[in-house]
Length: 112
Length: 112
Image 1 (cartoon, each protein chain N blue to C red):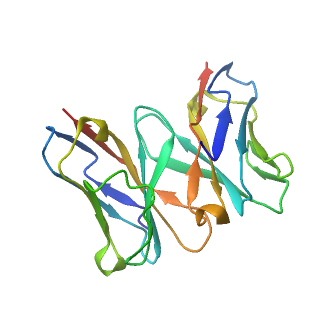
Image 2 (image 1 turned 180 degrees about the vertical axis):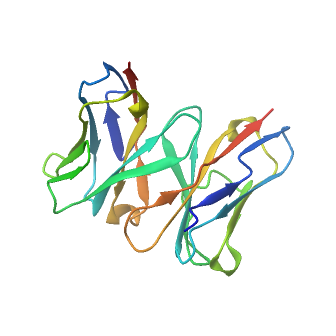
């Protein structure tokens, strides 16, 4: 089964609203990373949060990490049409040799 | 600084043919990873090089896939003979240390 699993699988919101995506994982981790993939393009790194951190911000992005619940959330505030993409969480775990293990992703559609 | 580059961006081949994908990592990055995304599903790990050595090839689906990284620079992933289920987007990523991974744009492989 997947190490990282995102929910919801798909999310559709209006421009200006906030979007929240969640990620759960199963093992201990060194860090958790969020990536974005625009249609037909490569993966873009958004933010990395280490296992000893609880919250990180980057522009309109806010990531939280709860290692007791083995979960993370990505909040995009004041969404824009350009935020439409697939979002993936990926965990780096010593149990998997610290390679990144991805979930299935959340498809976000921001309507203008 | 150049990012991770992959070639070709698209490839359409017939079942039974051979295809070789290439990845040029960011200069100086010892870690190189191959991933695959099939039919919009999760991004699956294939293998991990540290310099020229295969650190982890647990994700390689079968012996029709061969990856090399001669000299610890660029890497190739050969599929021989290709099957229909090999269709998907193949991503390469590189990193230095345990930090964030930089991904290429991917190669979209279609086997017909």
